[in-house]
Image (cartoon, one colour):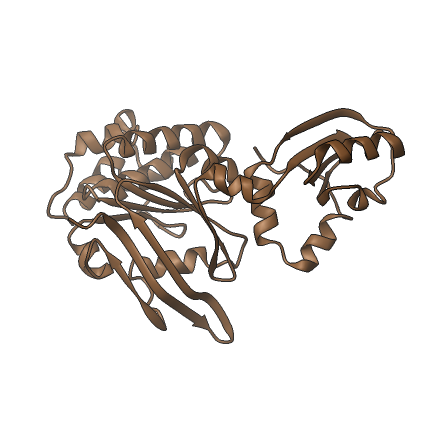
Amino acid sequence: MDDTAVRLSGLTRRFGPVRAVDGLDLTIARGSTVALLGPNGAGKSTAISLMLGLDLPDSGTVILFGRTPAEAVRAGRVGAMLQDAGWAPSATVREVVDLARALYPRAIETDRILALAGLTERAGRRLDKLSGGEAQRARFAFALAGDPDLLVLDEPTAALDVAARRAFWAAIDRYTADGHTVLFSTHHLHEADEFADRVVVLAAGRVVADGPPAQIRALAGGRTVSFDLDGGPLDGLDTLPGVRSVQVRGDRVALTTADADATVLALAGTRGFQGLEVTAAALETAFLALTATPTTRTATATTRTATATEH
């Protein structure tokens, strides 16, 4: 039996002069959990739409479990949570789950779906009375109804608070425990680091990195030297020995460096600072390094960001 769940070959989709997906090749093995990362405009949502058969490529092929997307979806092999999914607000959670079950040939029992999604106590509640996290879990329940072998999640935790995210990923953990395949796109890099066993990074519609989270982090190279400015200047940080990139968040500076010892020694000899930390490069650092254009790399060294990226 072929162990491949998803095979994208030479996939291209243009919108006018823009190539949203540009010759994309991607293979996903059964039973894996894959995070799809990339900046806005990288082609993530377009790639997902093509994969699900919601849009047609200009060239290339999509094969899901040896079938076309339409065949795989009709057979109940694929479930999806999309960013623009809508609801009939007056319906209850149980009614929506029962509707979804009626669409597939091998539906899971309603009570099991509700348990997997953490919605047993909310089964009789109307959809328009759910919290944001509960509504997202209801979308998850709808996607689970056909017992899909592949679950595709497009920004599944967008706009959720921390508690709701934790509850959602607990539901995903229950689903993947028996070997189901999951592909999710996200802007929350810590989610990819924590929940994916493979990370695929897109930029300009192409794969620029592909591997386990630790391997992607290693692509950034070196280590991160972070410290508080303590009123010191920003000028010259990018010229310190070994420094590859500079990020400034309020008064906190993070230097990605190929030689942490040389960077720290030069730093100590040129300016005052407090709260020095030297750590392995984070997934966020690798992501920025892999997807930055020459323009954004230059800007990063001189731009202050008022709020820290969420972790």
